[in-house]
Amino acid sequence: MQFDTTELISFMTNWSVILPALLTTVLMAILAQVLGIALGLVAALAGRSRNPVVHGIATVYVWIFRGTPVLVQILLLYFGVPVLLGGIDPFPTTYGSLPTLIGGAFVAATLALGVNEGAYMSEIIRAGILSVDAGQAEAAKSLGMTPRKTMSRIVLPQAMRVIVPPLGNEFNNMLKTTSLASVITVTELVMVAEMRYAGTFKPFEPLVGISIYYLAMTTVWGFVQARIERKLGAGLNRNDDEPGFWSRTLSVSRGAPHSGGMR
Amino acid sequence: MTTPSGHIHGTDVKVSKDLLAAIGGAPTSSTELVVDAQHVNKWFGKLHVLQDVSLEVKRQEVVVILGPSGSGKTTFIRCVNHLEKIQQGRISVNGHLIGYREVDGRLVEDKEANIARQRQEIGMVFQRFNLFPHKTALENIIEAPVQVKGMARVEALEMGKALLQRVGLAAKADAYPAQLSGGQQQRVAIARALAMKPALMLFDEPTSALDPEMIGEVLEVMKELAREGMTMIVVTHEMGFAREVADRVVMMDEGRVVEEGTPEAFFSNPSNERTKSFLAKIL
Ligand SMILES: Nc1ncnc2c1ncn2[C@@H]1O[C@H](COP(=O)(O)OP(=O)(O)OP(=O)(O)O)[C@@H](O)[C@H]1O
Ligand SMILES: [Mg+2]
Image (cartoon, rainbow over all chains, first blue to last red):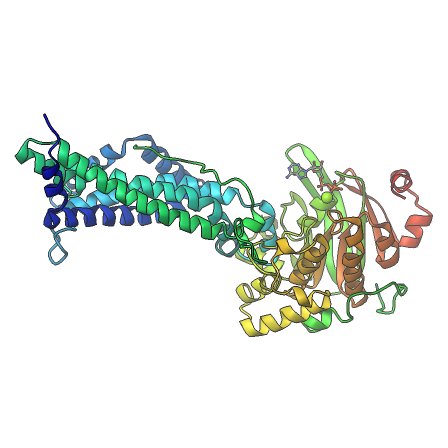
């Protein structure tokens, strides 16, 4: 069997199919990542609570969602939750006025990916908070700042430097993990490839095609990530008189406390 | 110190006068006792770090706490602004119980918001400065007045600049902590604490992390503060400062106050054996 370049190009430039799929993939990744950051922050803060119930919920959340496959979580949410809810289907094919791109499967996949991501972000944010010297919080408290103000004004801004590099890796991962949404019929890149070769019996070309698109997306993100990190680390490689905050203060250790793979 | 003229002799004062003028003068209040600690006991696990410690500090008094390493000096002053819990006894600042409130005759830990409010009137200066590294000197100073007291930013900036001037760092307003020497950082830290107009200042070995040539500039600021009538508890190994500035010297050992007196009596005629051997080592 030969590789059919014409088929590859024909698939990759079938814009009416490819563009919505690309948009779906990127949108799903961004929304899930944002949800993951929000949940991760809540879980990280809850995990520091002295209230055993609050602390317990955060611990169990991280335990469950890091300990089971995200694919299973997607399936459970999409097929399981409607069963639990009885007659109500929270994930219909379309939501009335919303664009068809954002149907029930899209929402279920995004939620599942986001909730799963929150468990990982929680650990990353926790590590970031722990990286800030305890004296910082004490100084803030001694000035009369409440725990909340201490966290938002003093600790978290300093934790960002440790949080951002692994966060970038998480998003790279997320772009690719969205491919799992194809199992619940979200029309993202893998789905359109499968639909293509179901008719042509030529799986090789569309799979190579979407790989090129994934590679393009992660590569672009890689540049964006490098830019952001350079901004945070400004001063490390600049010669001006006023080096940026991040490099001046918290010099070393740019390693990620967590680097994901497909879960 | 009881009178502003006090027993301070003219050393080479580098900072300008009127530190407290920058925050509107020395705080006054009807309560004569600023700190009233009674029978404080604290344990770290099994370790009995504070054993029946009592200390009273009057308004405008400067108390220096001395003692060997591990004697509980840091722990005690951290209890005064409730950075540490106590298990027995009570500590009041300006007449208000710190960290606890009384419920049915028992002391229960107060709400975070109340504790935070109480800490506003207690300034603390740390051995390691603990300036906020992501903020400039001026931003460090205005952070709490703006965020905690809701002071208008313009007003806070004006006060912050005045304070920086008072500690001799007017030119460093826009410098980040990492761009300042240790001595400069500690002076900013003092200004930051003063910006909350505290009734009491706690110092935990404020010069111990400094190179010798920078100790003087920080002590100078502290002397000026004392001269202007700030109530202060100072943990330090700087005997010169203790002799010159302290109204009272308190010696701690193994979690207890073992001797207390005027600097004159304390240094020339210590009665306690522990004090004698401690002074013999340190002087
Ligand atoms: N968080 C803590 N947990 C357990 N033990 C502690 C803690 N902090 C202090 N200690 C112990 O309590 C005792 C008193 O410590 P503290 O720091 O108050 O002494 P110090 O007089 O300030 O000493 P130094 O002059 O070395 O600063 C020491 O034995 C110390 O090891
Ligand atoms: Mg100490």
